[in-house]
Length: 93
Image (cartoon, rainbow, N blue to C red; front, top):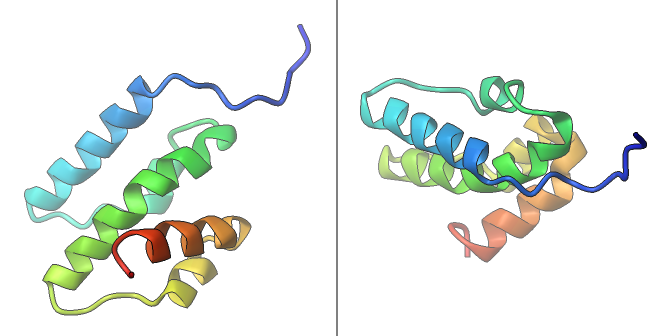
């Protein structure tokens, strides 16, 4: 079977990972987005990152500091455009 190049549309694993990520934050832990991205197929990285970035940004903001868009772009250079789109459309606007 050939790979069509389409991103899988099953949100369930993504939702479960985001929920676990949020729970870890609520429990006082400091989960790393990179670790969560490593748990899914690379084609799902943009989808998961799009969901995790606002969570991390809000957490940092509530704690009195926040990485800049450029900081997040440096952490995720392959997804630099997504970082701008997500953060400027949501928590950074």
